[in-house]
Length: 374
Image (cartoon, rainbow, N blue to C red):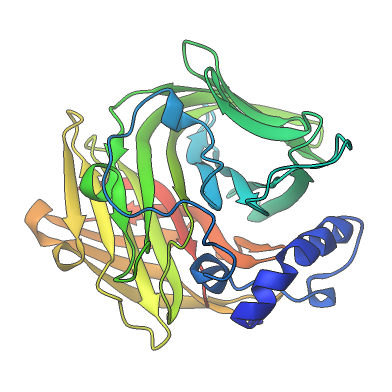
């Protein structure tokens, strides 16, 4: 990954996003500089007018399901592992990002004027054929092209969307040769990460986010690849997080895991890495027990150890794609392996996110791993 200076990121994010949009028409990853995600999320210049996450507060619904435009950055994150009746496996990711470009009131008469930019990533892993599909879209929140709202909850970009139907969520996304059409039904209570949804990421003022998860969404629907259609079912994980200066200085990236275990437990752990590769003291996690009871984990409760690497032929980045997760107090010693190694996104910012197998002495499951800053 190529690193931009902090000042350059502040000045160039809109330009780079435009370049990404142009790259949809055929430029290669080497044609443009990529954004360093950790630096972008730690940038403080020009953020004084935005709200910051400073202290715990109750999260309320449906209000907090929707956008928080007074904070700079926000995302709605869906990942899942699904199978056909014959056992064929697919992993998917659909993510919507909101980035506030300015705190200033929108002026002028143009209907294109807006303070909000939306970016979305769609990915599909076909483990049988060892193929990974990844695409991205970007547009402004103008004329209804992109946006989000809380009641009923909806987030969309063009014809990619997730909508609360009253009985669950309806997800639709299509691009080129792939499409997803799913229903997702909540099977467990939300997890309010950290202190009731207040999730510290560092020691600095405002180095935190508001963050909740829906750990187990029963998912079923149809995947299309080319002229083939597959009826699938399985489980999804959902994260919703918003902040302004979520990361502190000297942060290189993070390693985030989610898992649906066959004994009914659902697991999330996240390691925040400093530039020297060590943890910053604010790594965190949670376990949703089979009955929905939530246990919050601190950095001292778990150990993450890389056990194998893969080098991207596209970016040259070397990612630790095999891991061991140990959580002694919950009798978990899990070996984590990707269903395929090549699950790297190579858009305006490059990162690895893909479907994983979790195998222990007495339990196994499926989940996802996201890695940035390598």
